[in-house]
Every structure is written in C-alpha cells, then in structure tokens.
Figure 1 (tube, rainbow, N blue to C red):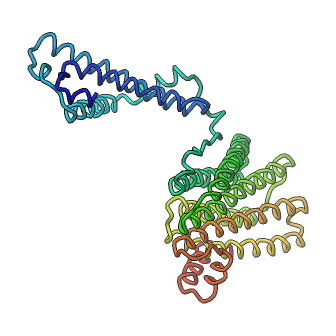
Figure 2: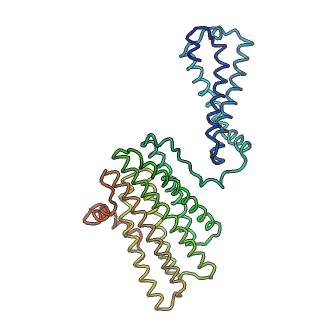
Length: 375
C-alpha cells in the first residue's frame, strides 16, 4: 500500500477502506497460530479478530457518514507513506479507546465462539521452539514458565497447610489438580531447556539456564510434598484421629513459618529479588529447629500417654514434608543469589558459606526464632 502511494495515484478516500480491510486480513495470522493450542489460547485469537471487526465497522460507519454528508477535501488528496501509517495508527488507537470500557463484551464473544472455560486444559504449556534460534529470548520464555510454576507451587502448599488446620475435601482435590499441573510444566520446561542447552549460550545465559533447570525441579518437589501432607491429613481425618491441643498450637506456628518461607522463596524467584532471597536460609534453619523441637515434645507426650502411636506416625510424616519444603525453598533462594552474584552455580557452597559467621544471617535468624517460637 505504501509502495503504491509513492505513485501519487492513491487518495485518502481510496486508502482508508483498504487499510480497514488490511486490519481484518492480519487476523489470519492469529487464526493460524491458534491451531493446536488450548481453549484459552483460541479465545485470545477470537478477541483479536473481534477487536478488528468491531473497530472496522465503527470506523467505516464514520467514514461513510463523512463521505456521504460532508465534503471533506482531504479524502480526495493523495496519500503518502506517512499518511498511511498515521491512518493505521489512528484506527488501532481509536479502536482501543472505544473498546477498553467494553472488555467484558469481548470476553463474552470469545466464550460464545469457544465454549468452555479451558480449565481442563490449563495444565498445557507451549514453549515456541522457534525461539531457540535466539537463546536469550528462549530463556526469558522458559523463565516465565518457571515463574508460573512458582505461583502454582505456592498455591498448592498454602492449600496443603490450610487443611492441616481443618481438613477440606474440595481443597484436597485442588491440591492434586495443582500437582498435576506442576508435573506437566516440569516436563514441558525441562524438555525445552534440554533443547536450549544444545545451542550456543553465553555465560550469563548458561547460568540462567542452570537456574531454571534446578528451580523447576524444586518447584515440582514442593508440589509432591504438598500432596504428601494432604494424604497424611486425609488419613487422620478418615480415621477420626486428632492432634492434642499442644500439638495443634505447635503445628499452627510451623504452618505460619512454612507459609512465609514458601512466599519468600517464590517471590524471590518471580521478582529475581536478592533482598527477599537472603531471608530464606535463616528461616529454613528456624523451621529445622521447630521440627526437631516438635519431635522431642511429641516423644514426651507419647511417653505420658497423651498421644497415640498412629497419630505420631502422621505427625512424623507432616514434619518430614515441612522440613523438605523448607529445604527446597532454600535451594530456590540460593539459586537466585548465585545468579545475582554471577558465581559458578554451586548452591551447597553458598549455603555452607552463609551459615558461618554472616551478620545478616545471624540477625535474621534471631528475628525469625523469636517470631516463630513454640516455647
């Protein structure tokens, strides 16, 4: 269109309808890209098409009114390349301004064209292998998928910890569903990273790649421990077993501590936040101390006949999984710190170093010990 405009034979009146049609024509790429993807992705393409169709109808009405009722000399003037770009921009900006207040209408149209909410396919993840030709962009895409894993893992752990206080079958089913999503994500991202590592990566990209590979394993394991906790609580619920009052108080403290460490670790990864990451390891040590203390207290209650052996086994399973959750959170935070400092990827080296005489670590450890005390 711009090439034809150079001849001087194309007027604004001729160009505007063609530009409107071109905007509808570009929807073909959206339709092609929606082939083989889930319902939610298809709905995006429907919204894109609806946007252009509605915008074209509105602007063509305005154009027809102006051309039929008014004498607009501009319409008979030759258009140049810049003019075409301006008309195209006005169309898109104008359509956006018009439709932003009616975004729910676009959603309604998408739901009518593509029925269903897509929840049955929400575990599907598609990482475009064409991006492997540009490793830095591919890593960014994989990192976004890993960040979504962090959100899913956090959501699952929170639900698992909540049913420790009060069992809920609906939440239990949600936990299993979220764990299945995590498994799907790990498979997809892991396979993608293997292919990515077969390309030429810079030193910084290689470090990021390693961080993602390790992190997705930790996120998936968080999900496993969340499911384990749920099964333990379900077992107690079905057997009509209950913790003692003292055990419930201790568990409430542990639940709060584990919730915070999961929040810190996932937010540190998602936001690549070093200040949040350094708070994780001191809290992990505090959680280990809480677990050890709870085990000792449980043995005392067991000897005094206040707690049953069956409930003791369940408590041991819960404590083990909470301890493992904090360990994986520690690994995730250590990965963020290692990348920030651009050291070789050695999580254990960092963890051993930070515990030996680090003032920040010591101060945070004291704060968390006071905050989460079961004494």
